[in-house]
Length: 93
Image (cartoon, rainbow, N blue to C red; front, side, top):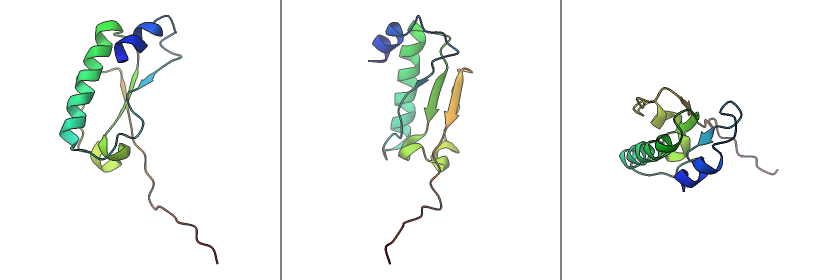
C-alpha cells in the first residue's frame, strides 16, 4: 500500500505533503509497532527518499510510549504524540 501511495503522490511538492504512517496505532506490543514502522519506512524510502514522514508510538500515539520509542536513523521524520490527560468526562446534572 505504501509503495503505491508513494508512487501516486511522487509529483506533489515534498514541502506540501507529508505521510503519517498511522493515526493512533492501537494498543499492541511496542516492539511489533517499531518493527512495522521500520518496514514501512524502508518501503517508502525505496520509492521516495525526500518525503517527510510523521510517526507516533503505539498505544494510540501515547506520549509515554513515544518516550521509549527508538529514533530511526532517518532524519526526515517528525515524531508526534496525542496527549489526552487530564481526560475530562462531562456528566449531566
